[in-house]
Image: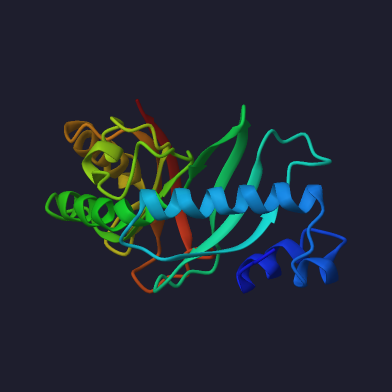
Length: 219
């Protein structure tokens, strides 16, 4: 059977029949994984046509309590330490697939928007990191709107971390700053988990130089 070099490499890492796979000789289990891998690839191509992807590995549900396989993939020209993930469950004779790549599309706009809103209200922002807990299906493609994610119209599970420069703050004012940030975000209809961290100054180590932290939930 004709396989791409990428398919051979990934499938060989999942099977005890690595040598046979490299020759295109697949058993029933290997064939099932190949069909699923190709389904993931087709899903990504159709959902995000402006991007090119390569699947790097899979963590199968077999032998675990998971109800899904986790396929790891990377996107061309996007450099990051960890791979993106697609979750696959069987749906009759087809597959139900969801992924986390949408976060790469909306993250920058969300961070810029929040930085501008907080900065214009004299909040000493050093950095904002937007993350998302949920995996979304084919209905949310590359035209997904950052505003819809931020305001909870799209259920992405917003997880936003806001790092502040505490060099001009008094410890007694931390609570007031949190209250002010909360009011600003509520005014903008932002939903999600918000984690606010006050650092010693703008050059601080984000892990070691924390003066104060507070989690709030906007729903």
